[in-house]
Length: 324
Image (tube, rainbow, N blue to C red; front, side, top):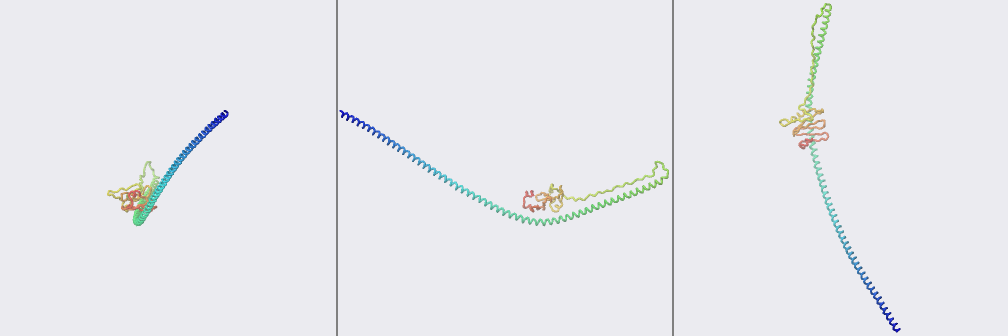
């Protein structure tokens, strides 16, 4: 029994040990299964993480590729825009150069035309100046002749005035002689009266008696005023007047002879001439202003001393005539 009890106890101990070993084995298996499950979970998580990272890397790569493509597209568009702007700028510069070249050529053509015009004007001015010199010489001769005739007329008027003065002097001398004769007659009568008084002094005179009734003749003063001879210009004009045309549509001062007669004096004491032009206007000018207008019915010339410019009616417009 003791042995059986010991055996039984030993069996129980062995059974308990076996159970403990089974329990431990079960715990170990559970731990192994838990470890394997945990390992699998970790592997799954790692795989999922790797997949997520792969997807993220793929998305990043796609985003990078997209950004790269966008950058390339933007760069390409910017390059195209720059090239287009450069082309437009070159085209604009080419147009500007073409316009400037055209303007330069136009300026050169205008300068050449102006030079030719100036040469023609100078040639015409030289020809007109020579013609003007000849006309001025002829006009100066006529003016000198008219001045000589006017001088002769003034001398004749002066001689007539002197004759009138001599006549006045002779009349004055005759009046003085008459006064002297009357004074001599008065003196002789006074002496006669003195003699009569002396002769009657010794005679008894009754009061109130009159012995003499003599009248003294009156002497009239002779005065003859002499009016100065003043030349009067025919049709005088002033700097503000305008000569009207006659009934036949012409001015009376169209000829050079009439022009000489249209000399007058304005309010400032300056000689003024009136001259008609082809459009039935009257040009009034004053030599004191250093401007001279000469001409006839056919043309009018204006010469300024400072500019030495000569103009023709045939080469300028009517408005320019008005400005001149």
